[in-house]
Amino acid sequence: MQIHGLMCKFQFGSDVFLQNSLICMYIKCGILQFGRRIFDRMLIKDSFSYNLMIDGYVKCGMVSAARELFDIMPSDVKNLVSWNSMISGYVKLENGFEYAWHLFDKMPDRDLVSWNLMLDCCAKNGNMNLAQNLFDKMSKRDVVSWASMVDGYAKVGNVDAARYFFDAMPQRDVISCNAMMAGYVNNGCYNEALKVFHDMLGGGFGLAPDSVTLLTALSATTQLNCINEGIAIHRYIQKHRFATNGKLGVALIDMYAKCGTIEQAMRVFECVRDKSIDHWNAMIGGLAIHGLGYLAFDLFMEMERLSLKPDDITFVAVLHACGHSGMIKEGLVCFEIMRRFHKIVPKLQHYGCMVDILSRGGQIEAAAKFVKEMPVPPNDVVWRTLLSACTTRENLNIGEPVAKHLIGMDSCDSSSYVLLSNIYAQFGLWEYVRRVRTVMKQRELDKVPGCSWIELDGTVHEFFAGSISNLNLSSSSKF
Image 1 (cartoon, rainbow, N blue to C red):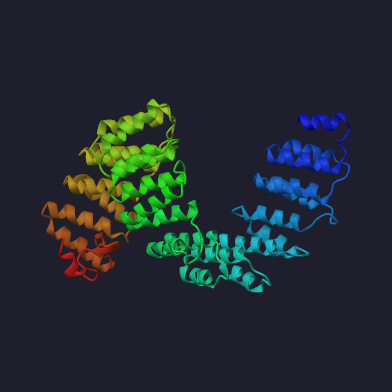
Image 2: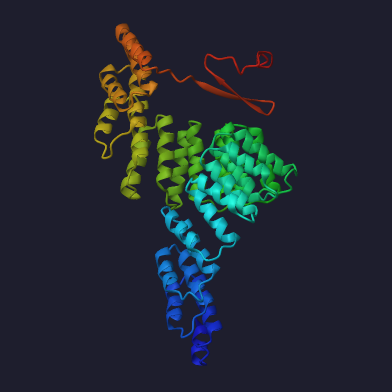
């Protein structure tokens, strides 16, 4: 601003180049109103002047202001940069597809950036037929074009088509590999995602993974419960000095906790210097999974002592921990701290955790009363938590109406029928058990079988109750 003052003092303020430089400076500093003030006072404006302001508005999410400027822009200074900036603004909006397409259709000329922007817009909106049509019409394509097709098909669940484009790419980059891996993970193909990761590491693609690659690989590893793979990724992170004070550290804590190594999760947590709320949440959640409610509660109280502001996810994790450890008093304390001290309005998940805490503590009547007094309508998870507790505590008076209510909410969910049948069986009401089973058969509902995983020689095996199709008896008999 001092330079701006000197320019005015020495009467350099009318130079277009210097005025554009000032606009650029204010936009990069996030002071758009000052940039616009200079723009409005300019006697002579060139295409760069308009494009600076349009791009500034777009990057700040002020697409309407950018469009107003774009519409009054003289046709002789409106160029490809102007059109592309506006299209990129609409691409970022949830409801911007029609506006982006209208501009793209009206463009007097298009370059590769224009085509890629529209391709990306189609892919993000799941309109892959139109994206395919655009892709086929493109006279020139680059790695961004191919990556958009990979990402688009993966997001609509067509991983085979995504893989086809991935394999057909003349040249791959890290972004396209990340898109393919994310597509596999989001569609439950975790081993395939790790295969792409290994291809990158093995030099098959000649690419070095970035932090997004490692995050996706850790997500796949966590889902597969493959601790050896997770350890290898952790070593790669340490060897290449990736920072763990961001999402990578959170993912490592989560991976170790969910793969059963809570001690290593705690070591990662302690080694992170500048911990964010996400690191604390991941650690508290990990302790909750392992039934270490008192440690999770102590960690939460440590946050309070350090004056760290928890969020709603923190309280879900703490309440979950209290529920799994039978800590009714501590759970009630956390719930009140959230409401009264931190002024966080409880969400459905928090109410569900409280129902779980009371139910696991054997306070079925209190849990039922809590559900009735909830200010938000309870969902099927809340009702099923209460019903499960009624089954465990053999409370037919509360359990029977809850089960019937659940069946009325979703007649296609077999778990409600099974829980109701179990309650009847506990009281020897075999005729009622028979009726429930008959209704299940009439509605063609099957009980979802239990499922377990085991890692053997680096390979994760999946087993379902009542099935030996995936079981290698000769190798498994060793255990």
